[in-house]
Image 1 (cartoon, one colour):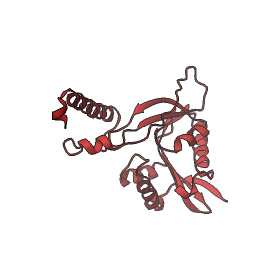
Image 2 (tube, one colour):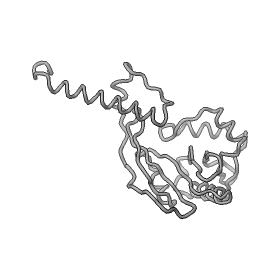
Image 3 (tube, helix red, strand yellow):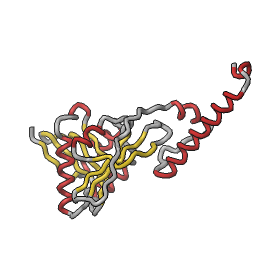
Image 4 (cartoon, helix red, strand yellow):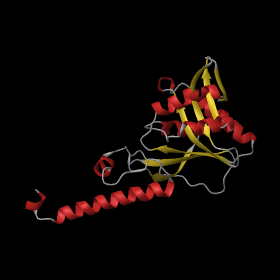
Length: 210
């Protein structure tokens, strides 16, 4: 099959936005306006198979450290080298611009973690995800230049759970656009609150618990 990797153009926008929404459980969500801007900045690569779109990568600006913000392949085409073609093309772009590394974040419950490992990425750390899914986030990295100090860890395979989110969503609405420390702090606050309530319940007389 004829696999091509090309910069996305404006006419690809409906496809990219549709594929993002179809895989919303696995991806960080970006408004359509972001894709409009980044297509103009040549930061979205599209895989085409026999001239039909098969997936895309949205990456940050080319520099020493390049971030992958989104990577998505059509579900029925996964495992057929299209994702690998996209990543190899990005590696070539970063290498040509004298970049040092490529990094990304991937939810611990997502099958793509195996793909990143197979592509030569290593997990350099695991952080807590948001309260909506209560999964971990694996931080993957690919070095294009040898590093003096490399920190590696086993990736998390923690499954997602919406139990806490359902329990507290009415009394403490959650902003789905929280990122970084704000997201981590919010998750810790909810976990601490739930733990305090469990301790308080255990301290009650059995009759009152019933």
